[in-house]
Picture 1 (cartoon, rainbow, N blue to C red):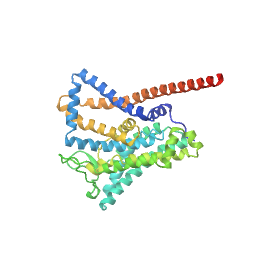
Picture 2: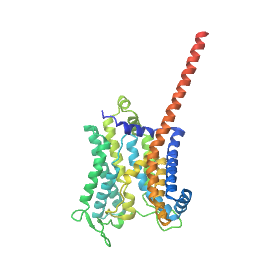
Picture 3: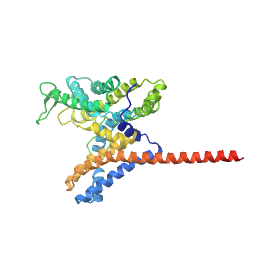
Picture 4: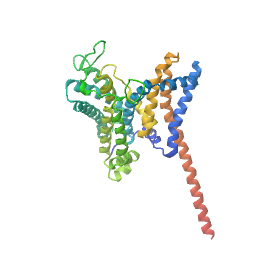
Amino acid sequence: MTPAPSSFVDRLLGRVRLGGTLALAAPILAVTLAGLITSIVLAITGDPPLQTLAILLQYGAQPRTVVLTLNAATTYFLSALAVAIAFRMNIFNIGVDGQYRLAALLAAAVGGAVVLPGPLHVLLIVTVAMLVGAGWALMAGLLKVRRGVSEVISTIMMNAIATALGAWLLSKERLAVEVAGSNNIGTKPLADSAHVPGLAIVPGTQTKVFGLVVLAAVLAVGYHILLNRTRFGFDLRATGRSQSAAVASGVDVKRMVLTTMLLSGAMAGLVGMPQLLGASYSYSLDFPAGLGFTGIAIALLGRNHPVGIALGAVLWGFLDASSSILQLRDISPEIVAIMQGTIVLSVIVAYELIHRYEARAQQRRLRKQQGRRASHQLEGASA
């Protein structure tokens, strides 16, 4: 029997399991509250909030910005999906950041060392990335089930280890080569057979959407089916709600923890693939970092549902892609970071408020039912 999750994590993930209209109200309240706080900050700094919003929307509607939004949303979605799988088991896997970066580095190194026919080359790189991500996450799972180490602590430490290991591997003496025309270093560039062509689905721009957006859509459907239409998904959700009840029904909790961490890590390994196979074709010092932590916020905002996660990822991608226009209008682009940060805080506050409202409403319903039952008993006794 594995130890129960920490009270903070349990309460935080419990807020995400609200149902019905109240569950939809929580993320809407979070975004609204974040927008209000951001407007106050803009007003204090002398920038008109409504005009700033209009600039973001106008720039965000341009074809090239739409493509950049979708590309950023693709990686954010994969990151949030990796986090969400663990969340449904009440496991706080905050090691996605280290898992995807180490996976991308080793997958790029393997992919750059061989030349295969196109589909096989891409399949090899993706498989290596998933195996590395799953293996790195599995170590945290083993620490949890064998030694009772909280996954929160172990994954934080393993993020730091992955960063140091990646820096050690990405050196000229080991996996790195010089990037032509710059002082940057990276893995050997991938051959053309490993390039995933982009999709020209947005008219008005030559910039293409990552081809792996199709993979993200397939994984969203698979995630929903796995959790809601299979026995494994039922066991996973049941274990996340109550480990004691799951054990009573014959579920091996330790095996579920390990399996969930494997799935979460394998998904994390895919986070860097759209960028690696669709844009950079090499893992270098400027490879995107921090996507794992963004995935936590998006998973919470989307309530671990693939549609909600997709909407949250698009919102984050839109804010990222639109922020560059603010500096050209003499508006600090850091306002976008402020809004994203307040969304993270507002998500927790909103779920707490909605949870308390739901608890009070349920108590009122129970009191009314007890009152009606007592009234019926009195009427029966008098009769």
